[in-house]
Length: 349
Image (cartoon, rainbow, N blue to C red; front, side, top):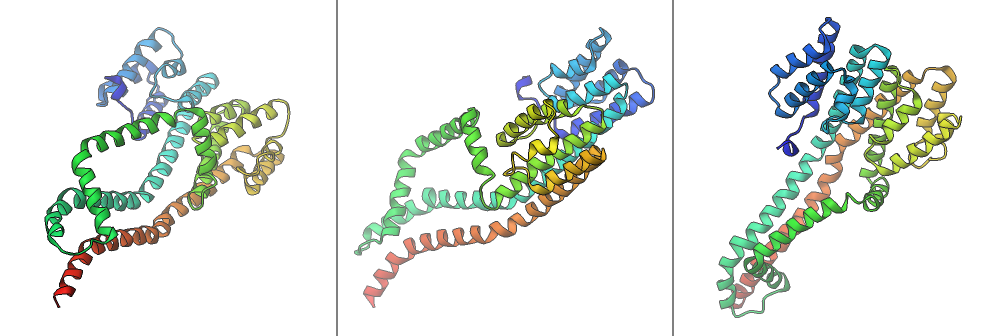
């Protein structure tokens, strides 16, 4: 059952904020977990909190408790571990809530921007399937009685309708199998690596994908640095938090260089394709002035704003392409249905 249960980003934000408040008020951590568990309705989070209460009462460190739970990732655990080690758990929980909130907001903006194209494409697919399954079979007897040569568009639609009618269940099962197979195919590292490399090079979506990864990097380093996590450990956390393998590989390489004493900005210069000069320049300034936190905070806000602006413009860019595609589809169907009837009526007159 736990496999199908989940904890949303907003639920994590609320939980972290409430836990921070209870700790600042002086409430013991185990009692805080107990209180929050009683108030929570999400079965997965409730169970996690009850488990946390039992384990912390036995002396288990808080970060270890969440490390063993699949619902809480590396970033979540690292913030709590840094807070425990520095004695500033309540403050680190605030940092964590801020990071979760910002990351959640960014994902929602991207999802909202792609909603319109998803609706249009889904509608077109439903319309096409409806024509093939319900409309064209009704027209088939009429077309068979017409003493005219059917145009290619009509013959194609009739063939498509027959195929759907005769093999619909097999086609559906094939599509489901392709979907499931594609999901597991993208779990293969080599395939995901190739796709991620292609994604950031695509027009329109490529720049957004790059700037989204840069936003994740900047937000995490800024927040982790302020919460007391060392830069080497921050890079280790970030490499497992970015969603594009090109950035993951680059950050791993940068981390190795930094561990050997290379400046962060200098190490990033070896990856100009994914770290733009403005990003590297601001990082170099932060290193020179000792203001790492401020520099990455500026970068986080800058690139988050750019992602927001570009995702808001995305429907405007995609809309003409979708309208042209739908127009071609409608013209194709209209021609297939009207042309045979026109040929007959023109022959009468």
